[in-house]
Length: 577
Image 1 (cartoon, rainbow, N blue to C red):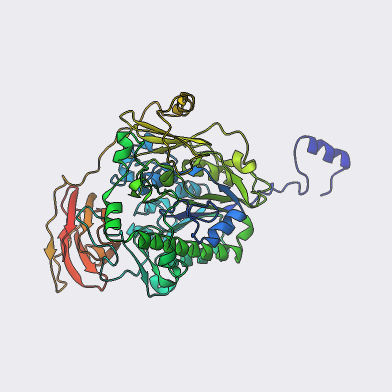
Image 2: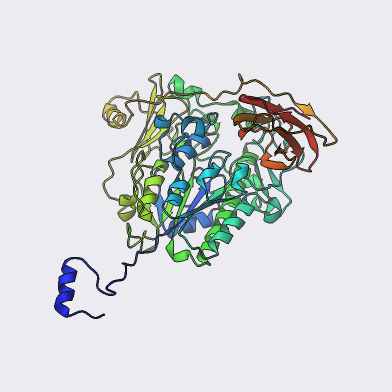
């Protein structure tokens, strides 16, 4: 129905559209979200310049088409607390989730994770690969690959049968996955991240009835650094360069608390066996492989029906030492361990950012991955979730140089220990009062601790303002005191009858066999239901029921033994074969 011009003017004055009087207003399509996590990736990517030999063309092209945050940091320098904070929006100093030995859901039983929040607001939330720390949190997802009910986020992955391959075991302290090798397999034969990228690509290649939140967890370059041989070829061993941030005397100006976090047995052990360059080669090859898997996902998006309405976020849970500060692995407050890749690409037409992100934009403001939750809900036009501890990054996506009154806090493994990252200065404070101060504009590798130099009080006091007034207590999930289930070895596959009770109980299962095993629970009808693969050296908690028989099989399907679940939380250790 066409209205008179004066009535149109009157209606416009009230903000009422008249194109189709009587029809409901058309709601703008909500954007999709592609949420890519890359495990244990430090700044060794081309667009961050962390190592001159790194090859990451796909991550770099994403940065060229979106906005790179060059001063982004993790909530904690370990997988579990970092991912728990990112996915819940709750800071480690609030939740008390400080390290990998704790169980997220024991500390945050009611936290609504990011995919659940999107799902509750009309999105289809799905994922594949490692997003949380070795579990999926099935109730938070509409769909997952592998199936969410297994609580195992890892597809089948090809690993050598005889391990270790490159680094001899130095003692019971050594993580068995600290190893590297070029494998004579194709990407598809390798499986793992290839399978994750394949499943994610399939979701991106089809039309959906709802907007989607799709999480893609790429496991490499997490140890072990086993990837197909072709990813090693660009890095000839004779040409390998040592980490740019390494300096032999780098611990000399550190306080005792800093020095104690420097040298660890891994780095000394690797050097003793002449494997430092080989390890760097393995890390570079694993990054190159991870980048190729990211490329497969980005290509699937670009060639599919969702390319023009999908927000893309790429992040890593924490950095990684390869000898800097005489340290190997993670768990420190230094920049090499807290600084992470963070790239956000927003298409035009998103209501919170109508013009989208500018191609190749770079923001040097200090930001934290804790901000991903509120940023994505803002961009998707969802109501803000109460209790988010990080500020939204939308103001910086609008203008990378806008005022930003925040610092980025990284919480170490116990209350009171933290690193504070500003735009130029970084401050590390330990619980005993020891501290470190670095000027990253002139000293990006943090070689010179300025905390005890005169005339540095101004910078220290300015950063100390961001120290929280209180810290949640550390609650241990130490399993050593748990009663142990009896291990029943068996060769012919015969099992006792499984009689699961209705009650629920936690069983922590540790794999000491030296090979991956499949953990299966047997239901009351005798059917085997898989919890998924438990890798060699891993320990993981499972929710099950008293009276349940837990069968343990090798990758070849051979039953090697079983446990019968008790009626209280317990520890089940699969012995070395």
